[in-house]
Each structure stands twice: as structure tokens, then as C-alpha cells.
Image (cartoon, rainbow, N blue to C red; front, side, top):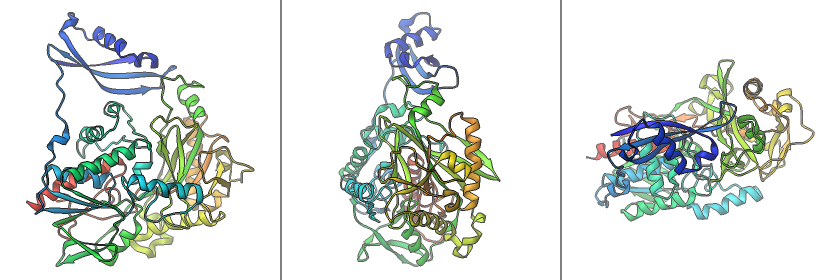
Length: 519
């Protein structure tokens, strides 16, 4: 018999496995404690609502039976046979997990990635951080593992109906992630750990007969009678396959242009745009935990805030406690920022995207761009921020109180952003509909979270790559594009995911659909 119970512990008690085992046994209601053969931790979360933060643990007690672990998921993979192959465009989480799922069905994945492998990619990240040099094919968004590789590795998702989140997490563990991600309520891996995990997934794909090719950019589609036959890469080489999975990220704007040229149907979708807010981590800890400094047993505190302003959502996004703000431009002449954290989340700063929901009908000034209205709006804002500066990757910013009051900061608070910040009139540079809502939203957040609205925080522009502005539609049942046989849009770039886990789940689902199609 298996009995699940919840126990409440102080942060110090949660670190003592023997103690909470004893507490679980005591709460079990089982008189003969020898009947409890095993105790398994299922879930761990922090509850900071009371006067003192505590941990809540969900545990399973195995009564009169022992816990038997499940076999490794990698044992289900099969050596591929060459007669059925699938091209996967993009080596982010959607593409890599699609490749693993194809291998489980005995199909050969051919993963192509415009960027570099994780090790070589580091040099280009240093170039944009230190020297403001943007490589359009290798940056924080493009390269092995996609944008998530260098964006904290947050694994929290609400996409519980899309598939087995536990399966995705288990595969990450089998490729080197810490097993804690299986139990934490808000799991993350960290940008220092993810590159190794991503490289291990690549090795698995290769081991079972798949292919992974870097610095290989899709430059055309091979279409015959409304059926995709393959793709052209690097403007010269033809790759043929039985089907193609499009798993590019939402920043691959040239892919949308290629689809338009090839008359592949797309549609506009909602997205969000705003700024990244950076606080001292100690301030967030004090607000959330009522501790400064926080006790060692507690992780860096985070927050999640949302409200409605003028019929549009304003919300925090991609919260990085103990993190860094990084330059995420994918082309010269634009300023884009994002957040990341290392596994220990031990930076002195906390940052979060704070954005406004934007619907297609909000873009009247860009309506002449049709489906590309949102994309052109993004570009306009990013280029406006760049043009306000000195031609480097320095980002325009204001102290939060000055942002809300519509005035220039005499100076800025310390920041983790390596290229540097400069005071700029964001209240004029941002579109008025975005700024006005952000202003009201931040005032609202300051009332909800006392201490949030402070001059110690910087507001940094622009947080603009939250999601795709375009959807590449697909059939709800077959997951294949209705107008192009054998073509499977997938993941964030196709408009069907928003984060590592949801993209991975979508990759798995699309791979299963491809297997059905190729039977």
C-alpha cells in the first residue's frame, strides 16, 4: 500500500533527511512503523505566506511493500533504420526532444542548427557581452539548445494537458540534470549546467543513429505538388527526407520570411512586450521572506505578479532570482534584453521581464504589414532603443520610481548587465500604449508587493522576445500544416509553446504525429 501525506518543515529541518523521515513516519498513522519500508519525496515547495517561510513536502509511504524505480527512459530508444528519415530544423528543446521521440519509434532524425554547438557558442556570447558584436547566427537565442540554454533553465510550466512533464524531466535527469528537478515545485537547472546536458542529448541522438549538424542554415524548402520533400541548407546543399519538423525559435525572423516567399500560410497571434526589471536580490528576499540576510537553507526569493490595465494583461515573466540581465539581440542595430541564472542563483540581483499583452488589433500603425505587423512592431521598438544609445549594446534604463513618474534618472542603480546601462526617456521611447500600462501595472505591483516599487530597481529596455508574433498553423489532429503535406510546425517559433518544458512536450507530440504519418 502507498500512502501520500504532506509535512511542514522549517528551512533547517528540510535539510535533514533523517528528521523529515521521522516526521513522516510519525504523521503516517501507521502504528507499527516497521511496516513502512520506504519513503519517497514526491514534491517540495516553499510557503512564504506566513510570518516565517517554511517548506511543504509531499511524500509517499510504502507500507508493506518496497519502492521499485522505473527503468531508464533511454532504454526505449532504438537504433535507427536509414529508410525513414525526418529533418528537424532547430536544435532547441522542441527539436531535441522531437529527435529523442523519433528515435523511440525507430525513425532517423536529422537535426540542423544554424548556430554553433554549446562550447563554440560561448565565444559569440562573450563577443556580444564584452564588445557589442552580434553574430546573427550564434547568440543568446541561436545555437545548440536554443535560447533556454543560456536563460536559467526554468522548467516550471502549466502545460499539464500536453503530455508527460515527468517524462521530460526524467530525460533531463538521465542526461545529467540534478534529480531535484523531479520534486521541486519550481525546478530549474541553471545556465552553467544546461550546456553539458544539451551536449549529452546530442550524443544520445548520434549514438542511436541520428545526425546533428551545426552552422547549417535552412535557406529554402523543397516542395513538389504541395508536399515537402526536403530543404536547402546554406543556399546550396539539398537535404531530402520523408518529412520536415520546423522547430525554430521565435526570433528566427528570416524563417518567417522564407515561409512567406514559399506561400506557406501563417497567421498573426498575440504576444507581449515591455521591459526587464532588476532589483537587488536582498530586497526581494526581505520583501518575500521578511529576512535580510535570508537564511542559508532558503533559495533566492522570487515573485510573480499580474494585473489588468485597460483590458490588457501586465505581468512579470521569466523571473530570474539571483540572476543576470544579458543582451539577447539577434541582429546588429537592436537592443533586446533577457534574464538568466546559474544553478546556485547566487548573484546579488534579481530580474524579471515585465510586459504588456499585445493583440493583433493593437497594431493599427503596422497593419499594412499584414501577418508581419507584430514582428515589425518588435523590430521598431528594438531599433528605437538602439538608436537612443551610442551604437553599442548598452541598454536604455531608468530607476523604477523615475520610470513611473516620467522623469530622467540622474544616475542608475547598480546592475548585472555587463554591456552597461544609460539613463534614457523610456516614457517617450516606448510606445505610449505599452508605457502607460507598464506604469499603472508597476504601481499596482507596488501595492501588492510592498517594497517592489523602489528607486533601488532599474527598468531596462527592451524585453521583446517573450513569444512568437506569428503562428504557423497546423491541423489539430495530425499536427501537420494543412496546406503542405509532411510539414510539421512545432514549438515556440511556430507559436505552440512558451518555455523549455512546453516546447519539449510539443516536440514529443509532433514526433509521435510524424510517426503516424510515416507508417
